[in-house]
Length: 324
Ligand SMILES: [Zn+2]
Image 1 (cartoon, rainbow, N blue to C red):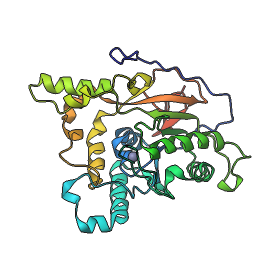
Image 2 (tube, helix red, strand yellow):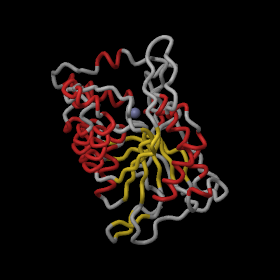
Image 3 (tube, rainbow, N blue to C red):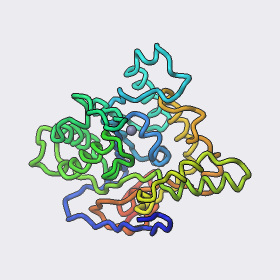
Image 4 (cartoon, helix red, strand yellow):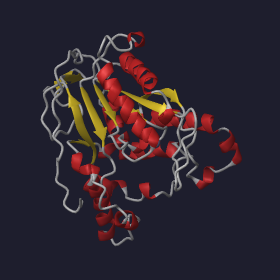
């Protein structure tokens, strides 16, 4: 298929079969949980959304499935023996700083990074890694965190993992399993009292349309675009995940916080990366949202939406708003 003319809003979610849910009580802070594969993913995917919800009085919990032990150092300035020797401690500290910048709570699920196998043929995944681990055990770990934090909304990756890293795909698998299991008293009774989240989304940050919007704005300003080659190489058989978006959350006021959080992962991001090339005011003008696909909902809502909590009765700062 071609992606020249992506059909907007191609996905229509199907409301889930009814299950008992518990909306936030008056005065109770609504809770959002985002599930990620590695430390830094929470800052490169949906970070401005989380900072916005925090500022608006929501509780936000980031779950990181692996410790990022096999992430390679992508910032030349950090490629030093002292950093390499203490990679786990360094990435723990980076993650803590990023969470502080975004204002989110954070929990490690404790599994080991699978690394990104490269080469032809690809080498086997390392023994003991997340992507080779037991799905049931991993689901139990996530169910336990869900039952403790009791999120109303969960955000995770789509079936392709957002991009084809084995840890991202496994993150999708256990998120879907945990969505099904967390509210079921018969599943994982040792993991706490059942809790059924109300909505589940996939994040879709890396759409071709967004990249084209940045590219065009830069070219119009008379500069050379760093995205030309990237766009040329965009495989025509690769559908644009942007066509699945149902929900665009305006969050341009928080793009600066997003970039600060990303820079806190100093080993993983080159400050000269093209990620930071498009000025924030241009981003705010041509693409002021972070984008999501509603996949499951136990409340009535209509797509397109501009709020992950649409349809959930929410009271923030003494004001009842956004009631379905
Ligand atoms: Zn990742």
